[in-house]
Length: 272
Image (cartoon, rainbow, N blue to C red; front, top):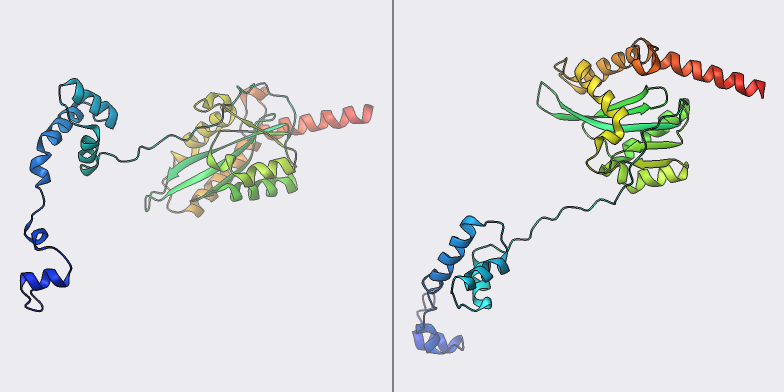
């Protein structure tokens, strides 16, 4: 009608639309659905977590006789039918025994620690790996991202000079649940001892070390970049293994205690 200066009759004929439809205006939904909107808002004001059927049953209990399909149409038009977030279910885990055998490479424990750079507030992570039998820290891998493939790479590096453990104790983080990590452990016949969700005390050895590492390194310095974190950490790590006495080892350092166990093991093998 505007572009071609057609009359209403000619324009409706061209569009094959009855003229009655042109003159008819749609209903004012805001006005017609006003009572339902007010009733729904009144219910959800006090109970914002309720879903549709709870709201509908409440409206019926208040004496409103609206059909559920009509109420649901208004409910959706208000954007109240958003999908709810569901928690990912974690497999049920058995409680892991904290008994530690005084053996080298019997059980390793590992965990992640988070911190932030002072210069740009960029977050970084550290992967801490501990030999529980001798309380010796084997590696602290530091980077802004440490996916499962990176965890496997660190384990391959440890394999070259330290060997591999009989079992690994860890939490249910995505890096430890990833297929690449699980398959690598199966390939090398390493048992994965997953702790129960929400029970960090079942991984107490690495958690205790994480506290020491945070108190003596992460909370003590303001880091400018990742290279600075790595340099200070590696220097501290050598001191932790070689110089720091450990109460659980009778005042010995982890390195000295490991050498003592290895010497006893060699003597036993020669005698047999």
